[in-house]
Length: 213
Image 1: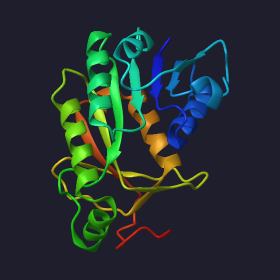
Image 2 (image 1 turned 30 degrees about the horizontal axis):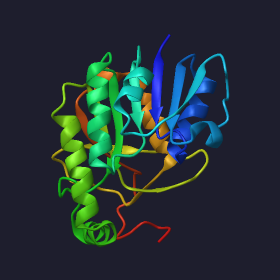
Image 3 (image 1 turned 90 degrees about the vertical axis):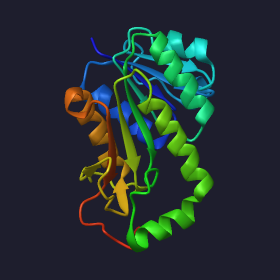
């Protein structure tokens, strides 16, 4: 049976991912988050374990990752936390890491949207995510980094497009539902996405800023 660790399990995409994995797979899940037992309801006690933990608790992370096939990391904003997670994964069975980060970490967003995004995120935020991504890229893990554009919710909208590292990033928005679908696609065919950094957006959203701003 496949085992998947969801780090930051109280986040919106993480919750959507949990629901779909319960409904569409027989995977065993570990839901890891601060105060997780208070913030999360266990959807299936036979398949799901909830763990209270901080991203910086390396020993607890190693234990949670035991026998895991995949890790989904919902937030790479903290350099120290990403480092602890990567070290823990390398000590465990080296599961495939799927990490959610942000667009712009390679200066890959051009034009009016690129300028708007840089102004909104700020150089400090971009640099934090860039350095976190470098930790993953230099590790011994198999991974797929998801450079997500601006997020919104739209039930049933599973449309996404991806660009590779080194290609221009196009697309001002993408639904969380579509990002969840991409994560499931990676889990279904990890070899296709191994050691990639994917720009993730919605087709036909080459806007100067997201439509909801």
